[in-house]
Every structure is written in C-alpha cells, then in structure tokens.
Length: 293
Image 1 (spheres, rainbow, N blue to C red):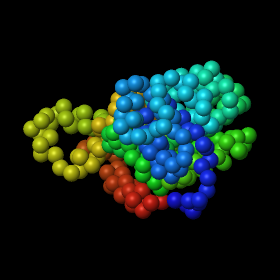
Image 2 (cartoon, one colour):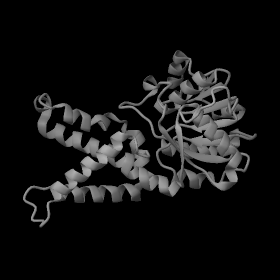
Image 3 (cartoon, rainbow, N blue to C red):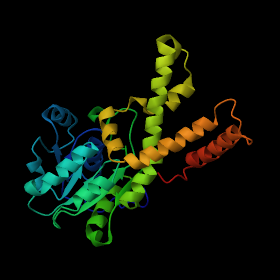
C-alpha cells in the first residue's frame, strides 16, 4: 500500500457518501475498518438504506441530501448522470466547507459541471478502478480497493484538498494516479468501456446463436471472456452517454481489428499472426503487474 502510515489521523472526520452501491458501500466499509472513529453518513433511497443498516456500514442514514451538510468530505457514488445532477444541488444543502469528489467512470462532464460550485466546495474528480462481476450493496467489501488504482483529476489551486483526499484514498488501500479529465476519459474508453461493451456484445451474440443447449457446451474460455456480461445496464448507459466520442472511436478501431481477422482476408501480410502476437505480448505486460490501470 505504498508506505501507508497506520498511525496517521483520519484526513476527514465526517464523510458523507451519496449512493450506496458496490463502490459507495465499499468506501464506507474500508473507511470504517481503517478509521473506526470517522462518522459515516449514508444517503440513498429508503429501499437501499435498510441494507446499509444491516451491514452497519454507516452511523447516520437517510434519503435527504441535507445530511451531507455535516460532512467535510462528500463522495458522490451514484451513477454518473445522477452524480452530475446531485453536484448542482449541493450548494443549496451544504452551506459550510467540504471537499467534494465522485467515483464515476467518466470525468469531463462532471468536471465541467463542478466549475459552477462555490470555492468553499472544491471538487476533485475520482475514479476507483475496482469492481466486481456483479454490482450492488450486497457485493461490497472492505478490501475492494486494496492495491488498486484510484484516479484523481485535480488542479494546482486545489493543493490542500488534493492532499487530504489523497491521504483518504491511500488509507483505503488504493494507489493514486493523477491525470486530466480529458486524458482520463480517452484512456478508460479502451481500458474499461470497450472491454465491457465487447463482453456484453459477445455474450449477447453467442447466447442468441447457441441457445440454452449450446451454452451447456461452453468452456472456461467463454466464461472468462464474458465475465463482465452481468454488469447493470443503467450504470453503463450513463457512462456511454458521457464519453460518446472516445467510446465511438474505440469501437470503430475494434471493428477494424475484427474485420482484419475474417477468414479469407486478401491482405498481403498475416493480420491474424500480427494480432495474436501483439495480444500475447500485451497480455504478458498486463499479467506482470506493470499495467497502469
């Protein structure tokens, strides 16, 4: 965990988390484990809050955004478009000072929306690059972020807020990477968004063509390749709509690679050999732990 100081005090005394799905609940569980004295505030729909109480994941629970007024760190962990909407409502509910961050998979649109926030609510975009095959509160766990990347999009005039948020992220066990919102969205279109869409498209096509009986013959390769196919669509609609240009470019390039692998291609070179050799080389890099995502 990069030299984590176990004796360092909590960078924030009161943390409000808006949205208690997999990521939001895991942040709460990890924070509670790391700093038992920190007051955790859970804000979500009433139907979700029963699960929060069951997990003992927060000290204060409710469905009113006004509860965030007591926090000195506010984490927006709802779907991306909901985070943008909530961000615009925060100044009406939080009259004091607080650092604001999010946990969404795209950064440009929410960074643009955050420009309207008052100076007392500095916003630093965040993206914990961690997840599970299925989402939701019940999948949350305290070690979800251990040794995983956590991208922050910060600027030079946010030094104090960024230092405190970095300490918080490190305390959860994650590794901080800093980049611009534009660079983030361009990179994750390939690292995260394209893999999700490709896995879902593949499982859709294979299932439609093979059917129930055919899928009974599927091997480990198909299961491994389509591990992401159970991801919730609502979250991914928001991601796709807020990173359209980058995702469209990634899909177009992916289609070009697939078309080069069509049997009977008249290409003078050996596209299958080129792709397979490149894929094996980059897979070794990924598995070696040298990846940056």
